[in-house]
Image (cartoon, rainbow, N blue to C red):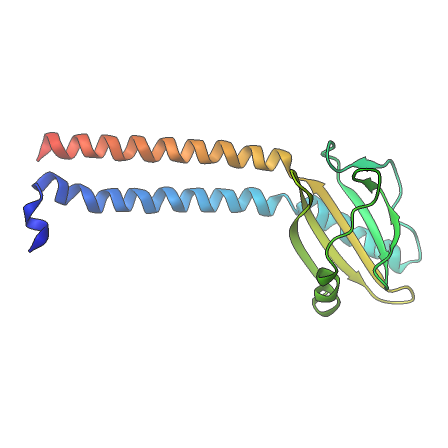
Length: 179
């Protein structure tokens, strides 16, 4: 058998290294998805509240204009049924950014979508788009810059990588010394 040509310590260490790699990957994926999915929470609440206001005939989209590139403040955009901006609290390079048209078609069928939107290079937004029906059908979009979430993800990458290297190194040394 081909594995018998390797030293005993190596034959014991390889499955351990595989298990360590899988566990580190699982930790990274779980925490990263928690970071990313939690980034949607304020927008889900804002979009749902805005839909209720729209259904009552009120305009929920009011307040200070947010610069999507610089600010971490959440924002709202309301669209009419023809996918035209009705009102907005966000600007990017002096105008309201518009998500891809295909999203509106999808949301017409499903009712909502959560997505990461990159309207400009280096501007990533955790976004929720919901459909409203009734007297004035349309869409409401709630978004927020993901800059801080992405910083957390970068720190997580470093921590998991460092733990992986330390775990592999220490188990390798232990395998060599003990076997």
